[in-house]
Amino acid sequence: MAITKDDIIKALEEMKLTELNDLVKAIEDHFGVVAAAAVAAPAAGGAAAAPTEVNVMLTNPGGNKVSVIKIVKEITGLGLMDAKKLVDGELPVAIKENVKVEEAEEIKKQLMEAGASVDLK
Image 1: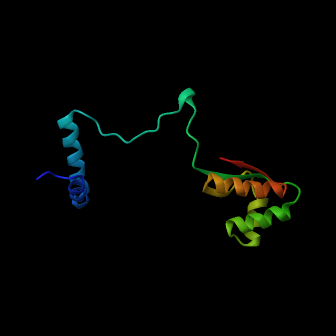
Image 2 (image 1 turned 135 degrees about the vertical axis):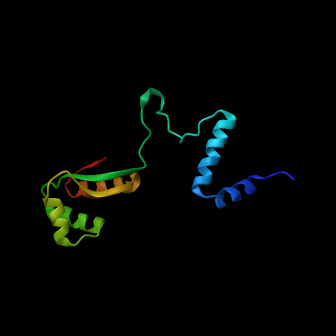
Image 3 (image 1 turned 45 degrees about the vertical axis):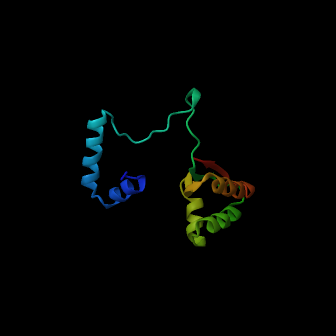
């Protein structure tokens, strides 16, 4: 009777973390390899892979602060006073962190239409 991938996966699911660690070491020793986490290699020319999540940074609220504050209030879910403090505070400031690039671009567009300066980092 041959052991299937499903049998191996089921056995691994039932192991404790220390048992899994011992298994990895035994496999490394037996096959003469080193188990390492996959690391994305930079693209040709040394360019890094495009990020999937970014921070939306307000760098300047512009001349129409009231509109910018209203948009920040909508985007963040903050109250009006907290949104005002965020916009009036020390810049640059993160309006939203770790958002998908598509969502960040939409937020940036909204803020720029209101006259703000925005960076995605």
